[in-house]
Image (cartoon, rainbow, N blue to C red; front, side):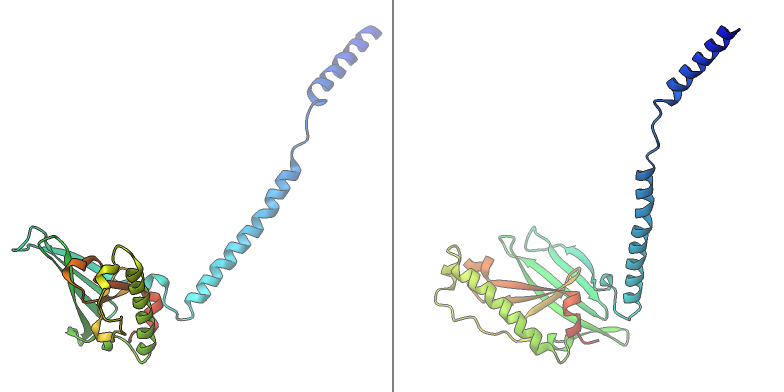
Amino acid sequence: MKNYHKVVLAITSLFLFTYCGDSKPAPAESITILKGNVPTVLAETTASENLIVENQNEGEPKPSSYTATCLEEEEKNPESEDPIIIRTCTYRNYKTITTGTPDFKGRYSYRNSLFKLEKGEYKVIDNSSLFNQRQDDLLKRINEKIKANYLVYLKDPESNECFEGVEPIRDFKINELRIDFEANQLVFHAEFELSGACFNVGGTSIPFKLQEIDPYINK
């Protein structure tokens, strides 16, 4: 009988050692760290969201509001296989219509019209009417960019011959520029009045983000 108890005791000890002796503790520390990080991330996200809401409530337009709505259409051209391109863009109560006409080589020249919505009807206006009393500062910036691009053409060996004998670049007046709205930009176009052989460097375009130029626009 004593031997029987010894056998049972030995089997029980072997069972406990086999199934419990090699067990490993749960990685409680890693779980604790994970749980500790979650509230911090959530707190930061919540703070950021609150900051966005506060900024939007200050009366400032959202960045997405600085976007023009544009529609581009093509018309048959009786003088060329290339179509006439007409792009109409509206931004708030203003609209630009850009008409592109190709020459016999398929190179496009453009003309622009600017309109303002008044009493439910779009009326043609000058460029100067689009801008407020700060337009002189804006025009100065535009002319600086035009001159910078002009100098690039002037120093380029592939285009500098086009500028031989041409009078030095001058400051443009606001109504001498072509302007048109694009998706999120207002673009100013200056013509250098070069010969047809220099078509590719005959002018330059100066884009401004609508969000950047909005303070200069008449409301």
